[in-house]
Image (cartoon, rainbow, N blue to C red; front, side):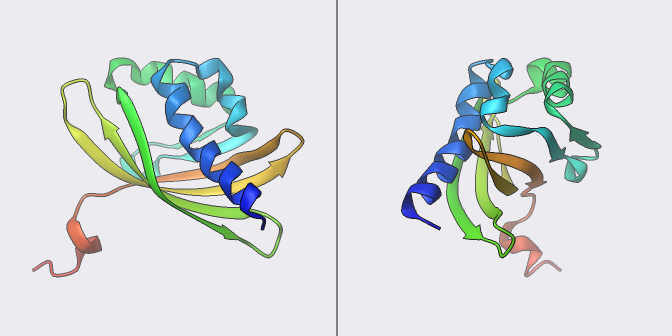
Length: 135
């Protein structure tokens, strides 16, 4: 995988937060494939499939959405089938100032317009050290 492709995948992951935070939900096709699976099962929700359903879910959440999505610690790994696995950390800042942390596990595929996320699993970070040292 070229350095250019790694940079493009990293910027793709960062673009999501900019678009969502600015309310540009009509531009999610710049980040996700049309049939994207957005897995929110760690939050007790179903998987959301497709761009329309993803936009509908964001609008239904309304004011409960974070006001700021920040992504960091992006690790890009090429898989044997030509896809890319990207793992990153996300911070969500809420309107009241509370903050939460997630891990994004993405499957990224090459399409005509560049790279797009075809699958995203969002996992909440609830305990330090992945639960090590808990009684």
